[in-house]
Every structure is written in structure tokens, then in C-alpha cells.
Length: 172
Image (tube, rainbow, N blue to C red; front, side, top):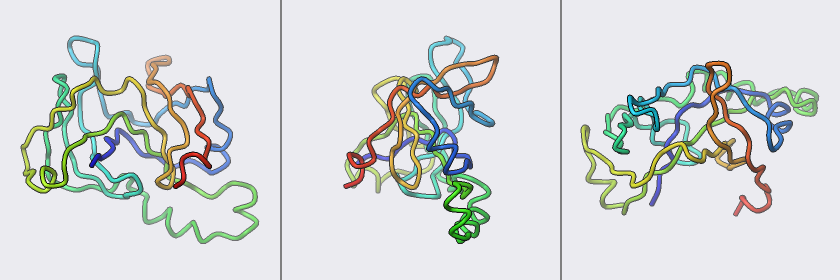
């Protein structure tokens, strides 16, 4: 069983998400991670969340790479309730793509057996086995829509789109 590691979730319109193409760089608001002292990896607060979940478990990414489980839960995006209400907008608004969607930037995943997940407690350490952030996944509504790489542009962190995923291929 694996849980995606969510670095950030933010609101965008359906039209904005649909317009993202291979090679585009999507700047991310309020990036929570910082470069480790070694300079070759990211460290800081993250969330473990099911692919279509709206709530995650707080954890801290170290440069080992390991996650230290915080135990508390947090909504992936503070405007979640407002977004759900606005999904009931008119057909006209839906047609022009102004309906807000939640975009998640997942920087990896943590894998272990279900019984191991069930035994975890606050402060436990989850070894990840590989560097985080080499390839990221953009997910909307539980569906992966693109993969990319983290880039720094004028002091800001962004995702450069490497591949747009075929939605027919990603939906079971």
C-alpha cells in the first residue's frame, strides 16, 4: 500500500489546469520545503494523503530521506469548504472553465504493508529509500494529470511539466 507525499495543494481553475502543456513551468504558491544544508535535497513539512483524499497526516521530511510522522491531520487546502460549495456553479460557468479545482503536487510516495501503516504512531520514522522530488505528480480530483520536475525560477519553486498524462490511461 502506498500513500502519496503531498508538498502543496492549491486552487486553480479547470481552464488553467487544462491549458498546461509539456515544457510549461507552473509556479507554486507558498512552497513549504527548503533546500537541505547539503543543497541536494528538500526538507520540511509535508502531508501523507490518499490519492483522492482531502485531509492528510502531517509529517516532516528529513535529508535522510525519511519522513517523521507528526500524527495530526490537516486539510490539504484551507479553502476546501469554499471550493466544494462553488462546485455547484451553473452550467455556463462550468462551460468556460472557471470552476475551481484542487491541484496537488506530490513529490513521492511512501510504501509499506497495511499492517505496518496501522502500527505507526506519532514520531515514527518512515524510510523512503530514494531522494524525494526527482519527479513530481500533479493530481486533480484523485487523477494524476501530469508529471514534472521541480525547478527554481527567479527564487520561486515551480513544476516544469515533463509529460501530460492521458486521462483515459490513468482512470481505471
